[in-house]
Length: 147
Image (cartoon, rainbow, N blue to C red):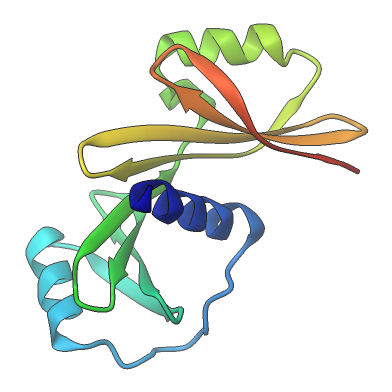
């Protein structure tokens, strides 16, 4: 249950934009130590804070990544924006088949513990849908809104 709440919070932040305080908040030594150990070689780190967790965006290996930490320095999740050709093949086929009349406006991968999930926002003239991957071959509707 706690894992699902964390996933929901992170996904909603990723989808709806940042609700974080911007700037360079004071980051405690536990979080900095954890980040530096887990992402050696990362650069251009930009921290944002929320009352429950911290988000850091950074570059590593020529890609922008996002990591989410508890205030105690525990890594909650890692995410990155991806293009559709980076999806597992069966997810891409399913997306193209089931949502042929939609365009992709957002797509990201989120890694929590040893589990990766994909979220895609698809739109047409009247609807916006957020889909979550189910295993590696299909999608479930996470959120739907009319325009």
